[in-house]
Image 1 (tube, rainbow, N blue to C red):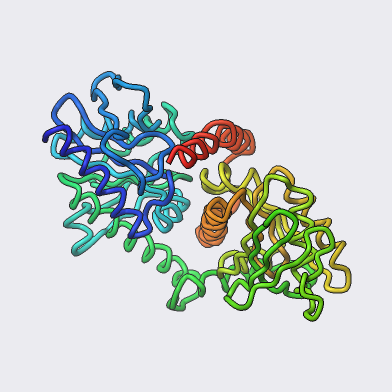
Image 2: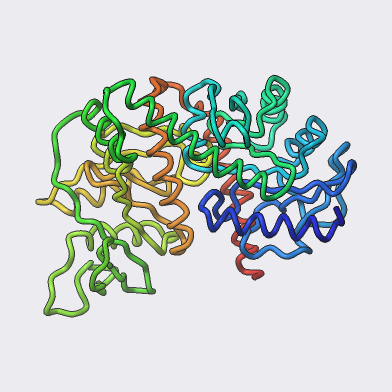
Length: 411
């Protein structure tokens, strides 16, 4: 394939994956083989929707060298290994797609694929041993998985998935089918435990919440999203509704005729204590509601959670009679993190912008889904260890998040 054509294929794949929801922001990576010596791959820390051919990096398959100042994905070694091990593979997609990430928490391969999935992927999907992102250990785990299976997909423990194909379309098809396979695998586990058929992932969340819920119930906090504008805060009901402008210092509405939402004190205090926060989003997805009801400290099962949300996620009780007490506790538990759980009420996710807060929200929701899945698989104690979580968090904050911010300004 011509170099420029390969670059365009990589860009097209990124957009297709974003549209399907299999890749978001800068997460994951995509490559296309040019010939037996080179492949084109996405750069490190760049938004897929803004990529141009000049951003795509050509890498040597044999020694991973490349020309120019733009760095290729840190997972370039895994892509090179795929091309070296599989002569029929010309396209590689690495995603953090939700259900494949959850299926990897089972700790075992997925066997017995049938029908279209077997035709496109193979009879099984091997699980690669865990390694920190961008490390030789992660690559070694993937290589071992590829060597013991002919599958076109690999689950990456605590991480995501690798999907291979002879073309963009083939690899994309594998990624879509893999998500369906992994969803059904998880739902089958629920059926084994309960004897019931899950109507949706909500069924799984409700089951875990019912079996794991601890402690006293608290009032359910009304969900509002908000954004800082200099000395004011705009609060909007999370489900939609009329926004309310409140004073940042007092938390009181600028319109004296209306009453302040219950969320005003909490949101205002977050902004006063966190100069880096300009947006707060309240997640009330089934998984965050279920996990917030459990009331435990949530530790990462997935590495993107450790990087973007924090090394753990703590739960604050809500006391309707004392909003100041609630706010102080929640703000304290937000230190060093980008989210906090509210008992029985989901999670508050914060960011320097609406876009960043949305990224935290997505990762937090997937992290809570991972908590539900790990519980169903009986792997609730098999989290990523604290030292590795802390390392990933520090590297992300000092390297990748700054790079992403620089790229946004440049665009």
